[in-house]
Amino acid sequence: MEININYTPTKKQALYHQSNAYELLYGGAAGGGKSKATVMEALIDSLEHPGIDSYLFRRTYPELRDTLIREAQASIPKELGRYKESSHDFYLINGSVLHFRYCRNLTDAYNYQGTEMHRLYIDELTHFPQEVYDYLRTRVRAPKSKSVQPRIRCTSNPGGVGHGWVKAAFIDGKEPFKIYHIPIESKTLGKTTEITRQYIPAYATDNPHLGENYIIELEQKPEALRKALLYGDWSVFEGQVFTEFVNNPEHYKDRIGTHVIEPFVIPKEWKRYRSFDWGYSRPFSIGYWAADNDGRLYRYAEIYGSPKNKDTKRTDKPNIGMQMTPDDVAKLAEEYEKEYEKGNRIIGVADPAIFDESRGSDGCISKIFERHGLYFEKGDHERIAGKMQLHNRLAFDEHGIPMLYVFNTCHDFIRTIPTIVYSQVRPEDIDTDGEDHIYDETRYMCMYLPILPPKAPAKVPLPERDDPLNMYKRETVKTPYDFII
Image (cartoon, rainbow, N blue to C red; front, side, top):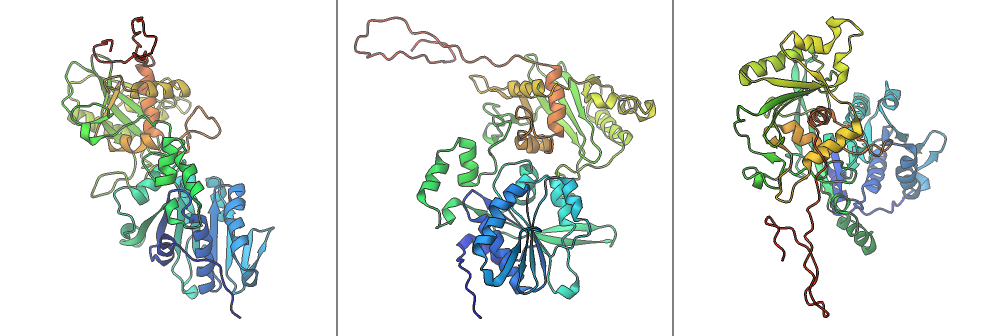
């Protein structure tokens, strides 16, 4: 019996289906046919490999129902299998099963302990915190008797709580379409193995089934949303909190219109500060700041507690902590300050939680740091006020000068601050599921030296004149000299 599947993949979808990479991200812009490709890949692959179990995930059940399940019910011929509503499983005629699942958080992920996933598909990967993805990856395996190589297929648009780690894993420093070999060190086996990873960009213009009205609709969106959904731009996205943050290498030297600048020797007379956010399973963060005579802050150094790549010395496992003791973290800061801060007086401000003495002074983090000569004051933990203080400092004046700069050597600040997104539960606050540790200690620093909101440039009124034909249109223009023009 011959059964026809009504599916003709686009060129990008075909590349997705042909990829041999272990981990693959297919995505970028909206409308590229990602959900369709996911269901078709799972179907065709399952038909080619009888008896395998493929798991298809979305973050919530309504999302799962309205995308992947709906696509499967519409696209898979009834002759190939049946969908069981009660279990959300699609049973194919050759014994393979498509398991449709949702996973809101790590607690949900733990429900799959012991599950053997031969294939893992995740739609909208940036909606997932990294720890959820990392745990689900541990379920991807297959016995030799199945004669299949396990693999992972993901799709996503830019944006969401997982934007930062997905961008770091699949986008940053990587060419689209190229398959990269990622070394994985096994302490148990005593050797280094590798996995392969690939990113295939998708755009709405790839999909011939979309009408022009859809493209036009995307073009009308606000700038950040338009760039993310129409062009697949991973540098800006909807829900981004600090959209005003600018990293412009062309202005590192003149410091105009950018927050990131070239390092310089900090004048001795400037006050110095140390901000601290504790973390164990999550990264800890220590930021070093200087304030000039105008109260402008300069972040000139940082110590960030995340696993680093041996070659680049950059974070290669975002939002994963080093699980270091407070004493070991204090030693790191002490060693840094002995080498680079000799003779400098540094004022410390930190998360109030480190002053907790409920377990005695031996377990109090602030006391442990004091034994190493590092002292802190309690930071102001007001979340909304702290966020607004950072907004105030990031604002540019009429000459393109902000009240906060960061040296281009502070890689984790530059990496994480743009990825902070708004909370869906508390719309005025950030989503704390993201990598917010540098943000938190920066917030304490900003609250320690608060500033007023920036004033809008003053409007200079034009003089009254007899102008019945409106030949001289009344307007005000702000110039460095406040001339009337």
